[in-house]
Length: 73
Image: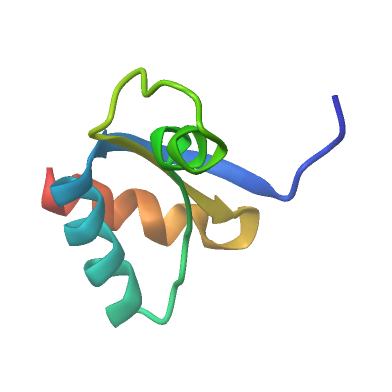
């Protein structure tokens, strides 16, 4: 598996991810959001869990991201 500079911070509902993205944006942090159900839908496959998304941060932003995550949830 290739080395990545991104860290998995959170997995949750679309609503939770939107709140987290907004809080991170206030600190000028813009995460990568992975939505496997949307990717599957676009490719024509079935959707396993349509309301779950994953949030990834660059390794340099993880410490701030974890603090924000604890404040939100």
